[in-house]
Amino acid sequence: MPNKILKQLHEKLRKNGKTVAVAESCTGGQLCSLLTSLPGSSDYFLLGVVTYSNKSKEMILNIPAKTIARYGAVSRQVAILMAQNIQKKTHVNFGLSITGIAGPTGATITKSIGTVYICLSGKNKNICRKFNFPGNRENIRKKSTQEALRLLKQGDGSLF
Image (cartoon, rainbow, N blue to C red; front, side, top):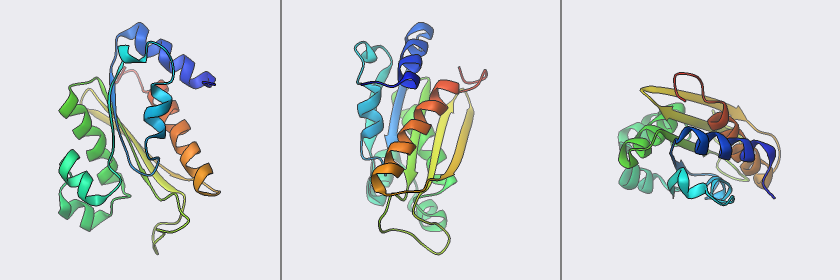
């Protein structure tokens, strides 16, 4: 059953004639699944990719290997490039990305399980947020998709 934020976002995108493409990693397609769950979502949803590995981020989204090596796949820099590049490739109004560590493995000294970056790219502006979600893998992935929906719904005046 679609949640309230999703329903509001669905109506807002359709009413304003805006389009979106998604690049997600740690959520494994859950964001795409939610965005396409309501009838009429093809009016705004163009494409979603799951670039789970570093190699796929390089090949599909043109993220430089040196950027991933320097900052890590879970970083503000990579999240911004994911959102910008999916937007540019698809010519949509909004590119939306998620990259993070859902666990139970993958944590580093500087990045704990639950570290997630969500980025929205549009009209020459990016909004990128860092989260530290508590809980298990399922909870982290669910919270990540909900925050991505919230970010897209809120956007801001210069993006929407």
